[in-house]
Image (tube, rainbow, N blue to C red; front, top):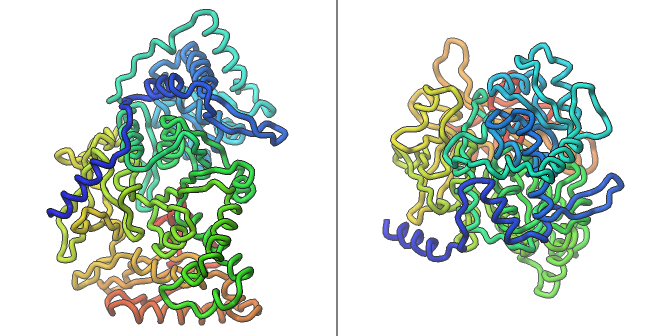
Length: 581
């Protein structure tokens, strides 16, 4: 326990100093005062030319849109936002959350789900991309509020029901210039519901998570305290903004810090966009980091002499074998392929392979992984500028506590959290709220353990645990990590299955093979289904040889398509993914 306290004390002394804010209006006013003429966003015009938006321009446009929304009777109303990552999405979120309650919605959802969320939240307005709004209008009979206001981001494709986003900004600007100060006069209670997020985790149906602006502002300040954000930083926005991970840490955190933001044109353009924008910070999920890693490794193996790339020991990587002068050249080349300025990856949503994180560290690219949930706005734990372990989710962020409830003999139990970042509750679901909020502690449903220094290790989810007949607990994520470590496998999903007339639970796996790697393994021969099955069988046997008998994979199927995933690229443990298992 003494080690835990001393580490915590050391971390508190090292926190980066920050100025407190409790709501978005206060944060925006502060940023404009300090960073008025600095660049808040780097954007592209219709011809692909990059231009800047200053903090002053940001504030003016948020005020203009907010004023327009107020004049449409939307003060203290529910306002939905949907669409791809964009500057219009950003100012819509800020304006909506200051004027009323913002309801960010996943643009990838089916229109039926979008309409359902709008009906449940009682949203009276939705701002978004033409594609998403059009899908709602095509099913307008399912929308309870036929007077819903539609504000379209796209200026070219209009429906008669849609208002123009650009014209709304112009109208708001005219109103403020004529003395309308209704937006400036808004007083925000930092502890009331202002953000309503519908989340679909990997283990159940969607719930409405109620967050206050204090919840999110506390998370911004805590993160700023442990991860330095420079005014010169440019954040490259890739992950969906409706999700709290990208919204809090990739959007609101840089705006608090005086940094800048640019947007990815789409996953296929990541590499070219990085060369165009020269970002210094990227929020990503492990899958994106792994793809970058694979690309870098492939390039190294092609360009470096064989003596550095062949016959690597189990825990050895290419960078370790390079002489000093060559190491510097490789670091420089890798950095240049990522835009030349990249200094840190902030990684969330799932655990990072420690070897991949180690490789990026050796290349001079810091990767900091953390742990969070939508219900915690979202960050709970994180590796920091001061203390870091690549195999851990990190230490508790400032002002947040966590502990393990009912740990077993290995110290594994449910992670519970307390702090100003914890949600108000689930929307109109008091019974569900009571299940997870007990005596001020939020019960995450995630399993983990804490070492003697306070570092958190995630071992799985309560609901995904496979319990055998004799009471043994099997964490699917552990077996999946063994499978996924093999380059011949792209993805896997491990589940517990009961057979008819048998009360024992068996470990089954679904495997999506890496056909490109298998073809290379077979020296250029495209594999048949039978060959793939045989190769996967050998991989499964190898995994089984590394784990106790009770954890052995008893059966597996080979998938011919990727798993269905959440927006943060976590494989869903329900729905179509388990039908064939």
